[in-house]
Picture 1 (spheres, each protein chain N blue to C red):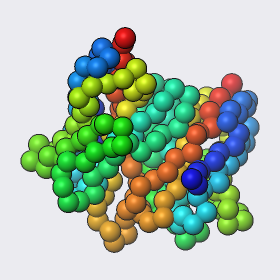
Picture 2: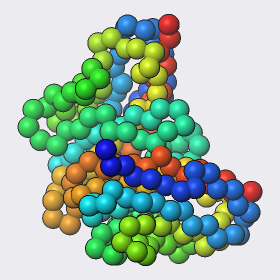
Picture 3: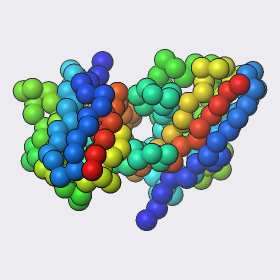
Length: 117
Length: 113
């Protein structure tokens, strides 16, 4: 069975500081990896994803994540955060096996990023 | 940009009552999902639906739950007899292919009293 662990439930950081949100997964099969963001009182929005190819993936708002197969990690980073990045961040995994893949996502517990002025 | 919509945004019901949560997935999508998020906890997979049938369901999705795509556009989640522990945010999601990005709706907050 797959599982996702986000070790940090809350990450407080000052504006313009760098941040890393950690995500580790376990799976017996190849996986696709995702980061979703949830702003207050809103639904989940895809931030970035790794399906194949380059292990470093980037979002349009400056976040990046690196797939590390040997460490089974997909940590999310941003070199300089803004107040508007304050949100809940969820790491998720799904099977990369195409045949019979229902595409269900298994989520981590979430990390609250609190950006302070 | 196309989006997934859900109604109502908030539903309050008495324990034991039936509720139906409605979702309109993105029009050309073929795979549909329900997830729930109990307050303060992780988002949990409930069920996936493809080709007019359930393709996978979790342990949470017991006989009290059912899903339906009645008219080719709506995708509904019914809870037959709600319990207090069913109080949660319920998210609908859809995707074109099972391996693609899932697009989530804004959620329905279900409160069972």
